[in-house]
Image 1 (cartoon, helix red, strand yellow):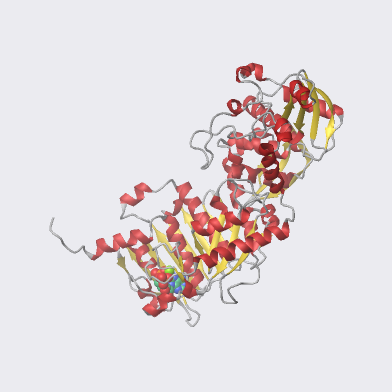
Image 2 (cartoon, protein in one colour):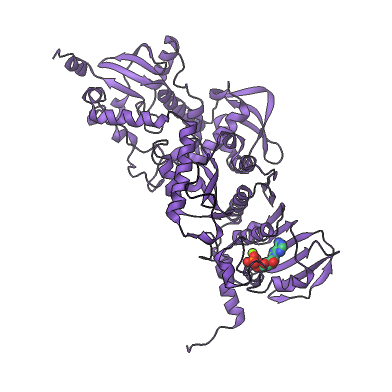
Length: 591
Ligand code: ADP
Ligand code: MG
């Protein structure tokens, strides 16, 4: 084929495909336009995963009627006027491509009224053809309606995910802007999904509670800025981070905004991970919502049509500002990081002769149960936990792996149960052991569809975040299988009528939301049943530090004896240390 210039129709389709690759990018561009127009209320309606309808309404400045026709032209923008302006971009948009690209791949209608006009105007684009601009009654602000997205790009349509997964991408986009602009009231309506809305109070913690739930948002630590070594116009950071114990299994909860723009940056993620080092177990990650303020001329946002990647002129400066502020916050809020003591214990386990003699098995490296191949990145050892278990000789695995009958002697530190067996002494971690017991119990009850429910005298309302609500809606059977009695109660709420008996003394609404959160987090488990059993085990287990009497300890040990895998908690940490008789003799030089 000889070289020929593409027709304007084809080239505009190609260009549009770069900016608008799926329904969520339409939502992103339209929200950015609303925010650039100074709106403090943005209402998004979505139907059919965004293919049937995406409508974004705002109360921003509006588009004057004589500019409405221009707004949908390619490279038409009110945000920059010359190449100099590219040096310091202060708005979310600037490329003048979004409306033109959307119009090229959908049927678009724009209704807008600016503050100085007495009525609004409207333009429509259907099958690539724009109507005239006509007067149209409307309040101040703009409503963009996008219908039949990608109707003229069947290839694109074919590669989209299901409507449900496009809807959840859209929700993620909206929640990001809700965190970036806490003073803006966002509302998202999608069919078959509770509407998501924020209050626009201006408080980041409030905005977070709509996204992550009340418990998490209340627990977040405010980033304490240090004196800025780069002067008052250097980069600055503020925001919220989770305390180390509220960690997650992957990095997807680490969120950054640069000058209120959500960005993806591997290197800034590393700054956070460095800051959390020693505060958090390995391969666990925090939730962060960090706002970076960087002089506009020090950041280049014109890297990619999606504008989610940026380049910094002084990346190392930004890296160190983030790392120091986050670390400072952690040190201020947790003077004795718990994880330090765990680290020093495992160090001494390998270097200290005395300790190693009392630690006849290797510190546990096994993967959590239920992990299939190719599980969470970073977990390389996927062999089952029993084959990693080295306390007993290998040939005693299998049925002979059962725990012998133990006699309880007492408790130390209100944390460890001391027991005697046929071959020496056992120190049992009461929390880890009970986790194992509850975990196996819940799994077998769920399998046999029998569960212990504690009915509440009065039902309790649980207010959920949209993510929590979606999980509950989608996995109601799993929750019923745990022993929850639940009833849908309007948008984002559930009525709790009963709790799993293992959890009954706790506050029903808190315990439900915590369990949903830990199920979302997954704790490293793949199947929903295992996730659910594990989170119930975490929440329903005897804590370390709880005094137990001999009867309670004996009951715990009896239950542990009946477990299939008594030697490790569901996550593979040891439930006990066994000090053999022969070792005792050796240590006391009797043999
Ligand atoms: P860009 O945002 O890069 O300027 P767009 O194609 O997204 O390009 O929008 C083109 C222009 O239309 C904007 O520069 C702005 O002037 C106007 N516009 C678009 N959406 C809105 C809105 N919601 N409120 C006010 N003006 C808008
Ligand atoms: Mg724009």
